Length: 271
Image (tube, rainbow, N blue to C red; front, top):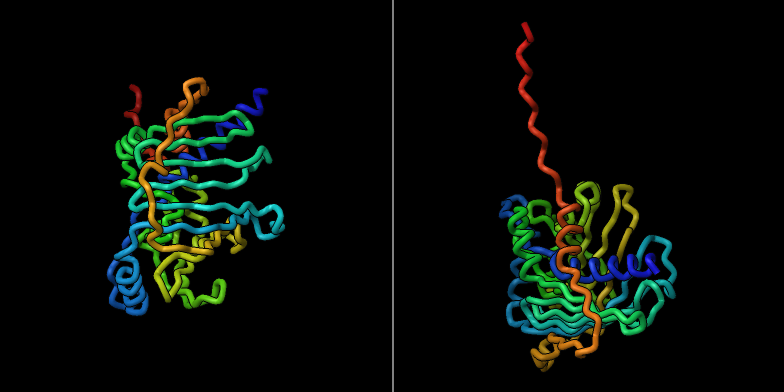
């Protein structure tokens, strides 16, 4: 039973943390990288009128992941920060639903009797106090380069995803909830459609170049009619609600890079 509750806590922490991992990105203006800057300008022009979108996604973990072991989910996103996401649970206990209105994130796993709540206002305030810039929602494919450190963004070429020509951007991942060692040794590849400026695939690679995680987006619908109430949740009066706010804050603070320790001045010799 203790292991089950530990697993539940990990799931809730991950789901809530994912809503604040990706921060705003804006590549530095480097004259020598004209192609990249031109591509970024085209992306900005294409996505400026997007207010909402829906999409299916497939998440693959590891280079040898089997298709049946790759969870598939669906997201509905209302900019700037409202999301409703459904996907199978890693523990095989049915479906997991994440609902966030930008202020409160709910994680619901009916098959495990889980109703968890995370106060995102408190989480964001704690990260701000820790010196982390304001973060944005994960899966916002209309802000495709948000997962990259702005100083590291490079345009490396083009590739096709689902027969769509895509710009390939690479850089260091920018994520408050990712261990500093992983951030420093990993590379994030984001493939952005030349046609509409939306991310079609995100891939995290380790220091050897192997894919650690890949998310591919498909069946994208732009600006669907969306009721803001879709991103709110009112649990039944008899529901056992677990507040995971403090656990999320502590977990993310543990992953933040530690400041370099200052060298102590040598003590004067004793007489």
